[in-house]
View 1 (cartoon, rainbow, N blue to C red):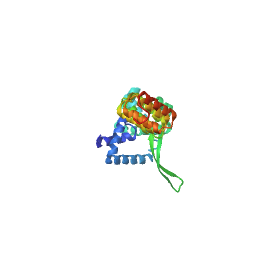
View 2 (view 1 turned 180 degrees about the vertical axis):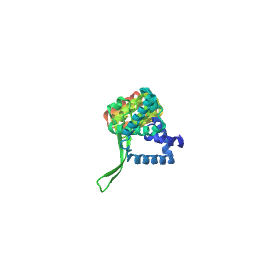
View 3 (view 1 turned 60 degrees about the horizontal axis):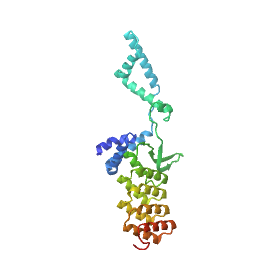
View 4 (view 1 turned 90 degrees about the vertical axis):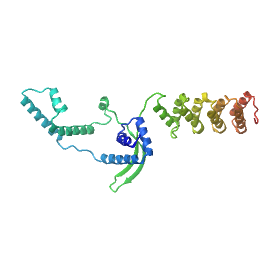
Length: 307
């Protein structure tokens, strides 16, 4: 994306009119472009100033417009000597209005729209039935400034994140990217478990498999690590997977995870596997894990001592 396109899309970004791909591409451009980031800050400042005031329609504007329109319609009827149909009125005053009436019509539409927005709640069921998108509640992500004044008012400067919803199949790139992001969310282990449980269905994808290996190696929640192990079952003979499994067998603090890792690791009848299990026996205190390691070594016809 170049700077010209980015500047055109900044306004659309502020009103949430970009698609997921467009927004992501714009954010990537902004990360590396100082000038465009400065333009974004300027737009946000202008938006903040505009929000401080509300347009006020002149008193009686709509009434005067209606009266003038009524008088004009009466004159047209008198001049033509016939009654105008609704279609005639629509074409004459809405589709092709006289030049002098266009500013008044625009002002009237502005006034009606403004008053309607003031009187009709944003979450009105009537708007929903008309197909008007309902605004999603914003989430405050960070409060940056709290500034009280002498009058008792408080100025709070905060960042907000607007919630969005995306529905799609697991093979959808957008869905997959969101799941990969959720799989490393440090705040919610439940979300990580659910995300890994879905991602494991597509572990043939290199990016997904690397995410599972990373979760198995470093996630603090044992449930997440077990889900990652389930997804890596068919890749136990892969060299990178085998390396991570050996690390987990020797260092993971959960006996269940270590046992599951042993079951996958012994699918490889390699000398280094026997060496890992022999090293595990020297340090393992859990009786079941020790028993499982001894059984695996016996099946491999390897001694429990140094290989």
